[in-house]
Structures are given as C-alpha cells and as structure tokens.
Length: 613
Image (tube, rainbow, N blue to C red):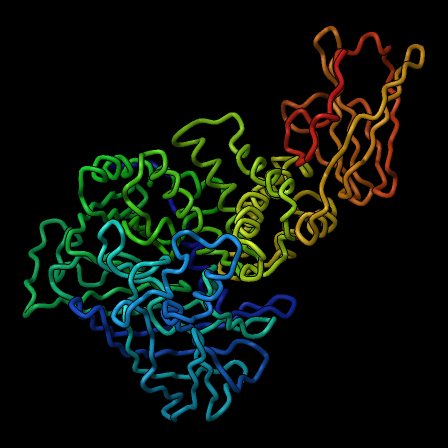
C-alpha cells in the first residue's frame, strides 16, 4: 500500500542526533547510555538470561560517585511498592487491584544482577526494590565515559500492567521494562524513582540487542532488524531466500539509534504485515489473527500511515524509518518506534488507541519530558494531538477537544483536583492523576490557542519540537517557545493553570443603557485571571468583539481568522474584579452578549457568560 506523505527531513534528525549528545543551554546537558545486550529466552520457564555492555557518557559538569539502575520487573512481587500502592489507593487501577499480592513464585517478575563491573573493576551494588544502587570503585568525571559490564537474569511476570506474559488475549510476551536500565541524571540530579505504575524517563542512547528465542516465535518492537533474511516471518527482503535456523532457536538482531528505551514482543501466532509508505517509512502491524481481531487490524493498516502523516505535518517530522503497532500489553502503551495495543477492540477504539500511542512518539519518544514531573506535557499534549488527528483522519468533529474540557470540569466539581505540578506517583487518587494529566493537559494547549491565537500556538508547536527534540524539555522551555512565537508574556498562565487548582469563572454582571451608548460590566468570580473575548451580536445579524487582554500579558494576540472584528481593546489588570466598557450602540440594537463563544476558555460556569434580548 502506497501512502503519499510529506518526505521526512532526515537531515533534521541527524542534526538533532549530533547536537544533542552534549547539549548545553543555560546549564543543561544530556547524558548518553549506549547498550549492547544479548538475551536468551526460555519460553518454557518464562525466564531469560542476558549480558549487557553499557557505555555511559557523563556530559554533566558533575563528578558521579554513584549510579542507579531501574529493575522494573521487581515491581511484580507480593509486597512491592506497586502492590502496596495498588491495595491502598482509594481507586486502584482495575488491571492491577490486588493481583500482584496473589502471584505465585513462577508468576512473579524479577530482575537480578549477578555481576557488575565498571571499567573492569568490580563495584558494590544493592538491590532495593525496583532500583539497583551502585557505589562506584572510582568516580565518573565530567565529560568522560565509563564502561559497565553486567550479567543478569529475569523472569517475565504474568501479565498485569503493561509488561508480562500470557495476556488475556493470549499474547505470550510483552517485553517492556525488561532489562536493567540506567536511571536519568540531569540538571536536577538523579531520577531513581521506584516503579509503582506510572510513566518513565530515560537516557538517550543507541541500542544493539540480540534476542535468542524459540524459532517459531515472531518478534517486533523497537529498532531495525539487522538480519531479516535469517529470520523470515515477513521481514525478509522481497525475493530473498530465508536462511533456516540451526537447532530450535533463532537470534533476532535489532539496532535502535537515539532512543531512551527498548521494547519487544513475541508470539508464535503473530501475523506480520508491512506497509511501505512513499517517504520510506515502514509501518509494521503484528497481531494474532482471530475472528474478533483480524478485520479491524486489516483496516488499521490504512490509518496508521495517515496518522504518521498528520502528526508529522502538524507537530514535527517523525524522525525514524519505521513504526510498529503490536498486539500486546494491557491497553495501549507507547515505546520508541513502537506501541503495544490490545487487539480485541472495535475499529473506532483500535484506531483511537493507535493514534494516541503513536502521538506519544512526539511528546514521549522525541521530546521526552520527565513524565514523573510533567505528565501533562506528555499525556496532555498527546491527548490534544490525538483529538485533532482522529478528527482529521477518521471521524470529523466540530469540537475535537470537548471531551477533554468535560473531563476537566468533572474533576473540578468532584473536589478532588490536585495541581498538575504534582509528582505523577504522588497524586492522592488515580482519577486525579489521569484527569489532570490527560484532560487538563489537553485543555492547557487548546486554551493556549485562545490566549495567543491558534496560528501562533500551532507554529509554536512545530518550533517546540524542532528546538527541543532529544533534549528533555520542561514546562519553562515550552512556555518560552510560545512567548517567542506570540510576543506575549505567559508565565502567569503556567503558574496559575499548572501550579494551582484555581479556576476560571467570568460573568456578565450587568448591561446598562446610556442613551445612544451601552455600558457592559464584567466580573471575575473565579480566582484565575484570563483575557476575555466578548462578542456582541446585533439585531441585524452582525457581530463585533470587545477584546480585553490581561495587562500582565504585555501585549495582545493577533486578530484570529473568522473572529468578529474588534471595536475596543483595553487591558484588564488582574487585580480588578470588575471591568466596565462602553460601546457606541444603543441597547435596543443588541441581540446578545457572550463571553468566548468559541468555548476555548475553560470557564467552569457558562451560565453567566451570555445574556440575550
């Protein structure tokens, strides 16, 4: 199937790769972790053993005396922090519940390091739950490399959360978070967070991974397969003769450049389909063909390339040469160059989850903010992009972000809202985390278009990707991009909407005839100030706008296409709870007055936003 899409800008990708290794701007830097791993899987015991050679580059100005590895599979053991958290939180994830506490010895997950050296010297290490604490025999100096060599073993847990074996749909192995992974060190120090169920933050690097497994299994995931003609299973070059495996196993060899994680999945029943896009990107779909799955996954092959095209046009060019959609996991979860998606879905759900996980390739895969600290910058921005992409390629919508706004309003009315700046692991409820990160995070972007204008916001999104790709941006980095694009000061927006739970509520307080003129008094009822678009519609069908930017914006948005023409522009100081403006029209000529007819302002009470005559 040929899809005509915008040709990828591989030069831009190479520039990002070259420039990001020792990236430094206002004290910023990027560590690097290049992995070589050989893994041998026993499909009968669900256990594996591996070796890891890791070249770790310390691009920081700091001398490192300790390092930390993530051992994610240790979460799937009775009494783990993930188990305790799930059994004590008020609204546990239904996929987890108390299931971890009931795992038998052959059903638990574990990762154990049997030996570890740095530059040939033994180091002291201690396994603490899902973190390996390592005391170095010699420090890693600034701007220097260290070579870590490791032997490790693991057991794949029964499928519970994201990763695991023997899922409800019968997928044998969803191998995410499966290897000892170096923690990230940045300008804020180490981020050795225990794994209790949230998202991930990793070091950029190149992965060279060899996986030896029963020859009947079909694999897919992160990275480019290096030996397709030895493997077959639909990966081989057209017309190539596939080399037969010697013995009962095959070794799959993958390389993945400039990624921060590596996922693979395996099942002997997988069907593997390829779609070659006109720009050279290969899209892989791997799924177990059944009556409930096959028809929709066949249709999915039409939408995945379209989604890649849409995302590349609106949010930045996808920088890799392939993407894989793989049946597995426990819902949908993003990984570099790939995603795991449960297969037994109707077409709308399947396309929607695929688009959402694909969109993560931009915000989690390439921009890769620290999801523990800024989950809304990943999940929220991804949800925003998903709504737009779904409306464009699958099901047109007049208001693609309506669901996000409604979700945010429900959270506010519940009384359980927490600030979006809350660490992802430390929300009081799963609902507060999910709604803040997904729904309110999407509203943050949609509402930003109201503040600075959608054209400036959309250009800013492209600049954000091109400026901060492969550099782990934070909230300040994003706001600065939008300030430069719009010419407005926006720190107030971030500080109110991200760091507080103060809400927006404006109302039309009174309309007073003044002879041939009319006074309109607005009031701020909520604690969060915002600029106001006030649209006045007259009895003759025409409309005009009174635009009231906040004084602290230090400017105003450019007139937007399709908006009513402005007749008055006056600053509204945030300290003033009311604002009265006078228009040169008799009150008898007015049909209605409305605050923000576009509904982009996240006003929690719209009942006082409009008066009609």
